[in-house]
Image 1 (cartoon, rainbow, N blue to C red):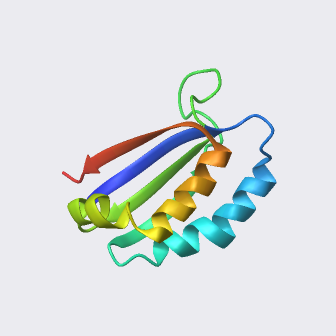
Image 2: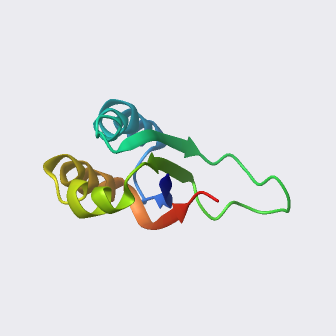
Length: 103
């Protein structure tokens, strides 16, 4: 099992309410409908556990995927992911996409 982890802030002018409504109604249903995606959750970052200051990101997304190669090689190019990704890029400012393996 592998994971894709996204870290990002919202673009200037994007409201938290508008973004989170889109996550619930478009992003999560579409991504959770892909057969290789075992779980997909979006988290609003609310603070730091330790230290002072503001977190470096506002949101984190975690995809648990049973076939990363299939997802990146096939699903990423598919209509569902491309449509959702295009919309997502209108909300997110410089997202960081991380590939991870469970140890």
